[in-house]
Length: 256
Image 1 (cartoon, rainbow, N blue to C red):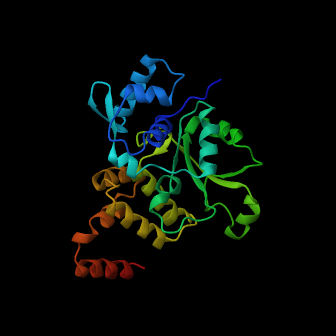
Image 2 (cartoon, rainbow, N blue to C red):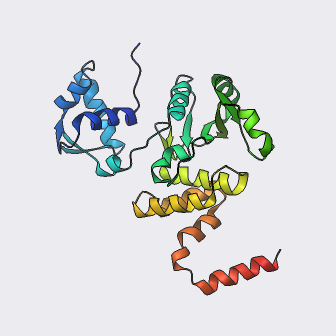
Image 3 (cartoon, rainbow, N blue to C red):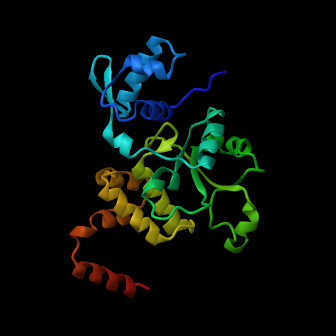
């Protein structure tokens, strides 16, 4: 049986083959996917335009969207394998955190927990789908003795599995950049995720510098995780005077 490709995978195949060519046609796409019917190729092209991967110049003529070329997601091998495994289950899920934003980290950890959001009713079945010989699955770091964690993982990939009822901020089983950053921020600041806060600061600066994050969307999504106050403070920090920052620090110190 021929494996079904996600829009991201189709886009990556087109990008790899087309290379620097400014424009290409449906016939060019057919050369990349020779086994597909022409009607299916037109449907695929339409979906790629709709999802923001391609720009339609005129009927049957397209170009790659620059932002998708520059900001293409590079999943780790482990995340790719998890994605393939969970796609076969048919349940809703998406990968978030470092795997979505690794291009913007100065130092990518050799090993890190892969953050996966899954459909709440399916979480037990999804746990079973992740082979325990390959994956150590947890739902929270705070419930584990940090000194014993390495022994628990013992060479397996560490998966942080989080149940959710919302998939609004994901596409093709991958979180949007804004959602991925917020998830990472939450896990680092609330649940001892093993990445230094300073690395997250550098990542944020890179994301802003490269125009990857929509800050209005970032604040909007933050309300869903109840961290809107933190994120508004971060987003609006360049407008806050040093005196106001000192003022808030004194208030916090007085409450300790």
